[in-house]
Length: 174
Image (cartoon, rainbow, N blue to C red; front, side, top):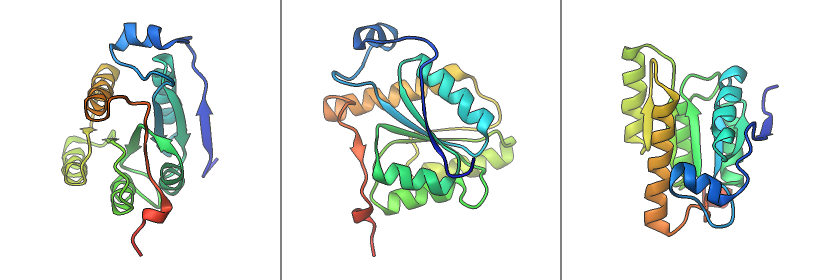
């Protein structure tokens, strides 16, 4: 369904911060990190959601770029993972609009495009401040390492990931 936001339920129980800390080494004090996945391919969104919720993250999936932007600007997420290639609003435009709205939530961008196209998108994503970028083929371990790095950096910068970087529509320049 286009425009749907789906909270994802963990498929593996990681029900305490201590359990997540034992797995990843760093965790919030009061709640699990919130991740927004933006991808118009339901299979990819579901797969990422399963991987991330199994690690104890609170995951929400937006089915298109427009919904993802709206959700990110009105919610409090610790990380956004966006696909590049989506109908209507692609991942580069998602990143551009979020940065224009002064949203500093870390973003990981990804695509299954070939190397030439993937490099093009990743160069653009890096210019927009992507924390990481993946293209062609990548392994879940690489994605999890990038997520861990984002949260470790946020913990060093803020003292905890639990204080999500929130964005506001009011911050959007006129």
